[in-house]
Length: 172
Image (cartoon, rainbow, N blue to C red):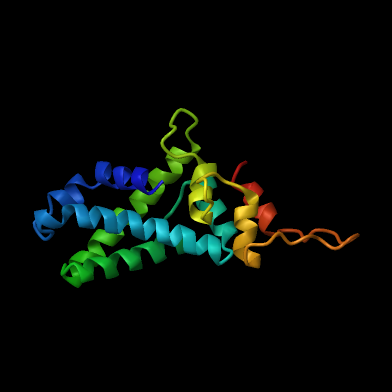
């Protein structure tokens, strides 16, 4: 997934990064990798922290503006750019321009049945850390209970609006 995300960033940042005089040409590839890495890490952090509803909202609506994922990814990206020596104002502008666009494109591609570059199940599998890169509910459940399956007590009703219900919402 990260390779596809790098390519998605590369395809969409020509004017913003490559043709930007404030980004040295020799750092273009590092900036692209910083953007995709920031988005991937933020999606993964949101899933790990249980913000599945927020992820479902982004992937279902395609609107990344103002979301927790976008804010976190923009902050991470700004920090990575600062680490590359890019001034803070330029880093903030790049983050505000690049991150929402790329997350929006990512959500569009996962929703497009004619585009196989991003499949929501494979994206979730990568984020959940599945060894095979495929989505498996046990990968996600394992994130919340230390890797083991947690069984429901006999006769106990499943919690409404639980993580599985939120995950189901991502596939509607």
